[in-house]
Image (cartoon, rainbow, N blue to C red; front, top):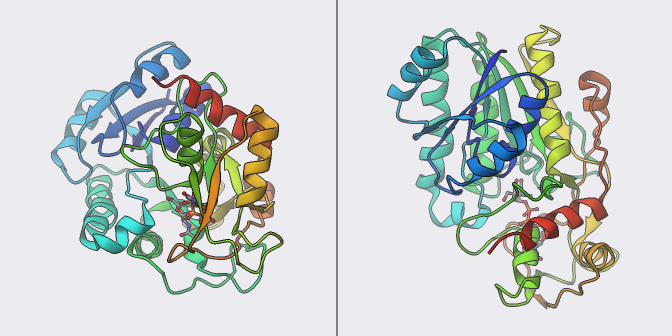
Length: 334
Ligand code: UD1
């Protein structure tokens, strides 16, 4: 079994990818500093994959850990790099926190990879690199717009750093809006503190743990006045990482740096999500329309056709399934 180092492997997307890696016959090794997750995610992973994955509780900047991992586990075939902060608003308030973790962290990781001869990486990028797009859907050649937040800047700069490292083979994956949870409800999205993203806030609010949802802006130029996003099931996203990893390890890349959009190709407004949530769960979310949130783009959704043709990957799960699984996960939290 090939060893795959998964930084941020106890986070939302990381933990689901650990399951997909195991199912595909890889041996995931998790590195996570628990800055936005909990160690008990390992319990859910253990139930799902039948053994406790190898886990290093450590920061990606603590470079001593890489030597330890290689000494204890042997050759690392590739790294999947999730460990990063992702709260757009927080990044505006605390830019250095974002530049330190997302940029310095990436550079520490790449330095260690070079030292230990690890030349393959899958990188978590984001549709945020497209900013407010001129045309939708966006494809991989759509213009990269000036970043509206330090978070967005770190994703753009991360892509540049990886593109410049010619000794590396990179699969750069631009996620749209990952939501949902594993259908068993054993792992899911549990940010620490008040969630800033739509779905964890929505499910916590419907569960009575938070006040009613505030919809950020109701007068955008869309069908119902609310923003449009391309929501994608986290299990579909996890499978895409395995497809990208296979392409790397089978040497099928056309060039050292390749980029793929990961979305469903369908946009939904915030109010459409709320309606679908009610249809999927029978529960009516309470909400009020509030002011616009600074930095929100009006509408963005993916053209995912390149990922389909090159990675052989396509999102399979629709919005009702995403919302049902997100709610199922929420009901299992105490
Ligand atoms: C943003 C980033 C995305 C990043 C993600 C990680 C952009 C364009 N997108 O996604 O790249 O991966 O953060 O955190 O920078 N909403 C409400 N009420 C709420 C929360 C959200 O109405 O309480 C609305 C937002 O205005 C938006 C939609 O729900 O229209 C989705 O918001 P969210 O889940 O926060 O994700 P993005 O901001 O789209």
